[in-house]
Length: 141
Image (cartoon, rainbow, N blue to C red):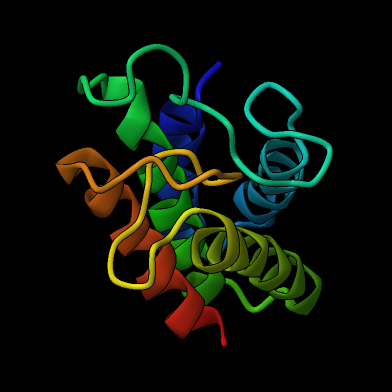
């Protein structure tokens, strides 16, 4: 299980729930989003996503960008749902990632791929992953 798979699944469910307005899709969406946000498979006890941060950080690895797909899906879900509790959960989760980027994985002008720190220098894949967090934080706040 990866953040990428969960993100794409949530995007699809969000669209299906919005277009059909069927309660079964809304219920499944809320249940899946709650489980994915709380999954220990890709985050530490602090809630910061840790996926894709192993090995040589100067070498690209698809997993380094998977977390951005998950955050992008949460951004879509935040705007598609009218479930206030889910919006609050997404807002809080995105803010954890945002604060980690700013406080633990940044030199003030660029962002590292290791969101829980320390800053490891700029890489294209680190910057790309950070963009979705920055956009989602704006959207959720």
